[in-house]
Image 1 (cartoon, rainbow, N blue to C red):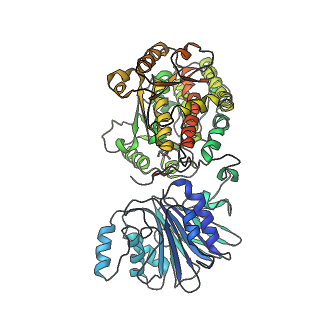
Image 2: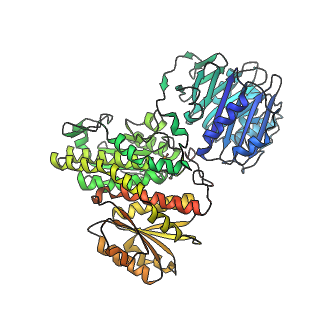
Length: 607
Ligand code: M6R
């Protein structure tokens, strides 16, 4: 979603801000802008569309100066347009603000400020912050921002500059991430480490209601009461290349190819002696033994990872497990007792719905365990324990490697619960762990043989809809495959349990209608084939993900994509890979922007 970057120092700010904004593009946005102090005035340039359009609009002489703030906006209040793009300025143009999040009481504030004579020039909630700070400004920007923030209701990460205090950026946050760092040239602020990691790997992750004052000489920090504080510095140790495409045409393909590494890294050190080790889990084995219900919450792909885990936890540990979309969970009245374990799954660790659900679950007395990809993210910090998925930074909007990291992490958790509950013996656990580890090599095999996937993608030419069908875990895998197809190719893809087709969806089948089937699972294989026959008879073009050596499937499928033989429980890990590649191939054929699909944001930080 929205992205913030800021710099103050000895360098020209424009290039640094643009570079930061380009690295924030993956989050999804619809307009971009920067504000730079030129020694006299704050100059603002904004454009609807991509950062490239902002760059084109910035003349050589525009926005010169060494202190500035920039923003990529994903519209919430006010349509995507130049006038609604950030930075926003006050009436005098002396105050410029960039903001992530939503100011919920902006209407009241706007009315009050209008009565005081302020004139608004956008439809956004953010603009009230610029006017409010202007209204409260008495020669001290920090104080004005502190007073203004005490009047804001909602979520915000804010960076503010003032023409009367050259070289200073005041920053604060509530429920919206902000990181701050410095190098020998000056100080940086961003909403995401990826925007500033080339300048510094040592960052402060600002806490809610803290304030920072960035100047060319460094940054000072204050708590909510205005008292100076010494914040903790976090070292970012991920490879800087993660933020580059590394020779791949897009980040999605690069990230798909990283998946064998993600499996290996996620499993490294997890089998000690003969037991599964998840030290991060804040519960003792005895406490875990008392767990009699598991809730898994997440959104989108993370929700799908939870659905897979439900199957594994119920199979191996025999603990009833519910999986809920986070935005639904929090508005229900879920049955939570002291022996309920809530597992929150979130790649970004900042999804607003998931965070709200975590808070709700904790208020109800549950222990919450987070599975996230982002160190120090709100999900990590607000959970009782956390597993990091070791996917490294994921840039493409469509989750791929983080999904595999989530499924592998949840599989470990299911194995551990199985052991603790005494439902899996040591030999079974070791065998399952070894087979889970083997999926890394199996994914490598899949990645080396993609001709059949390219062929299958051709069956989507001129098509606007498709079905994805399978049974049991294959059906869940189809949900994830269909989500990938929808997100990046804009083909309307619906996933169904294969047995459901005849109860309605089959009415849509006509000549050439693509039906993607995951047909690898042993107990339900024959039934799935029968369901495929039903679609085939009505003209469907069948694309089957099948197990190597299965020649029977060729009788019903127009195109078969073979994957290595794998235990049913681990099939979602391997079968998801060709589905990711298929979605990408269709998107590329259709000329879509694979990494930054329309209307979508990488992190959904609004409810
Ligand atoms: O960061 P999160 O895992 O909490 O994000 C949840 C969803 O927004 C995310 O999985 C989304 O569905 C992806 N675009 C899927 O590819």
